[in-house]
Length: 159
Image (cartoon, helix red, strand yellow):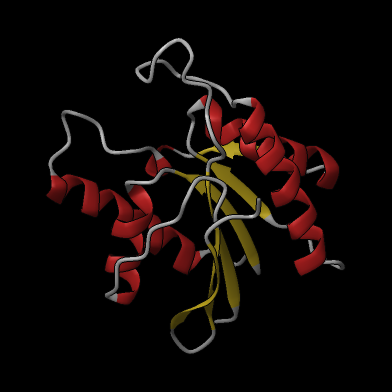
């Protein structure tokens, strides 16, 4: 197996009308998206077309939409990438993340790019690698799976 998973924490969201809403991005978030977009093409100048997956939250979709348009790829909202819900126990949340890891492991795509949330990312890394790694908004991490999964890039911010 030889594949890469790019994990992006959604860019800064607009909280002017409250944090409870399904808010889109703030102006700062839109600047972060441009940095993510530019960094992608620096890292992968001759990229095979990746799979693009996102939490269905507006801030996540807006983080990856410009990249999806440029690559002419479909951006798929994936339910396993949502943040933890109030009704979900920690055990259920971990089980959902394990299910995503199993899907990624079975995938034949050489590069998968996901956009998800600040609570999802540390649990993902703890489950996959046994270490907790957090990302700031707009942060970027890469996991390569050759013989085993290992983190190869970690950028807390692209500002």
